[in-house]
Length: 155
View 1 (cartoon, rainbow, N blue to C red):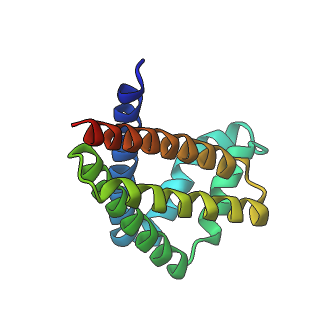
View 2 (view 1 turned 60 degrees about the vertical axis):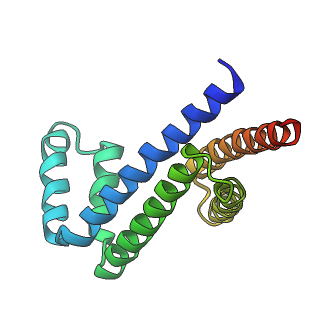
């Protein structure tokens, strides 16, 4: 796969990710905590009746028990703003807007910095996985940006 095709695939991935975050943010904003709690309890009931020590089902129930209205509002605001920002940047990159390349690099740098910061507080290896993916996407954006600048100089 060529560099430009990888770039397009990466921004498509980020666009889908942004859209899912937007949907998740809307759900977090409008789905009552009690409904989410009930959904998690119903989804895990059968598994826990068969295997009471199931780690994933118990983790989901613990997650549901820890949710608060403040957490719900934070999640909604975070997902909505993060999703909208990603979609705006993906739109700009896809349409080859000059402002989108440095803006996307800046925001990806901030996202990666935050993910690494959170990793040192939580120890979650997923944060490092997401940071690595975002770093790879930033590298593809930077390469595409440099390629476009070379094309403009040569024109």
